[in-house]
Length: 401
Ligand code: PLP
Image (cartoon, rainbow, N blue to C red; front, side, top):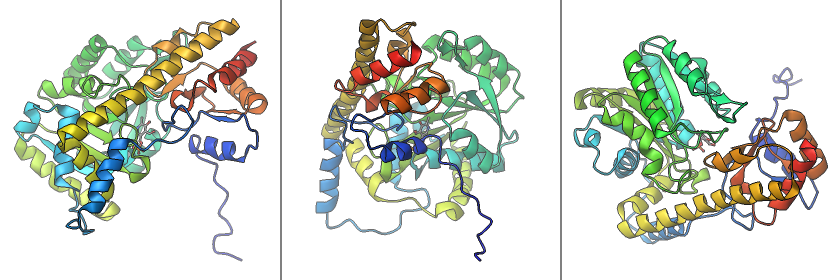
């Protein structure tokens, strides 16, 4: 017998499990819309040209070594990441009230931020939107926070439940942490307007809540890095405190390199410096220090004006292709006379469309049309192409009629 005989088979991850099922399907028409990763019009993963160029520079530079980074990661990467998030001339950065540490992509940044809060924040409850990215609840619970939800999505309008959001946050205890998607809310694709953000900001400040931004799609939503950071910047401009977890997985296509940053915006430089010293105590026993390669790629691109510009062009091209997939899918459903109002496909923002299809309809589409997606009806627009839109439209049409 094994000492592990009692260990039972765990279920697949609800998101990554979609790809496992897809890979097992021998059908030539199969379509994977589960994965949150960009695909080209040919259905292939994309390495940005500017990333290839940066990697070439890294390889050719014989002075580069593979020594450990400091606990907080690559200093240059941290500085440039903060500028990208908060703005090139952010007063908060200038007065040094922001501490930024390199972490393992968005997930790792959320986890480190959450563990810091569990140790040092007086109110250990975090409110996450209902629904939200499936990993949030687990990340925060395991970090030692107590997770509650606030209303976010209204299935009736397939839009924001703004009233519900305001009500739930106004009932939260003072000091509670609020997880906010900086842009391109996953899985719903529904974002507050700037006016709504301003109202959310006022309520959060009035109640003394602590905002924690998850920024996994900066530049990916609108095609503009600055426009997609506006929500976060509003909360920094008022002089108050917040946290932000940044990921370079989507916007630089660095998924597997695990590059990200956690910023903690404090009231003063003195507090920020003490906070950073404690964040190091969280990181050291967790992964000691972060990997060097991906952060070096990002630093090269962000500090070189020409490469930065090339990046923004490539990023906009990805965002635009996704936006054009929204139009094509919408048009294809209209052409088929598919019953229902499909305007939300055009309205929603970012990588995903929250279709409104239910679990049974999703199961039907997978069984009959080999279309794979999460059971909540979320489809990745980045996994679609002009060639596959008709097949998806056929599948949706059959599922709802
Ligand atoms: N947050 C949200 C909302 C996401 O959608 C994702 C990825 O899908 C992440 C965070 C973290 O991604 P990563 O850890 O790959 O940067």
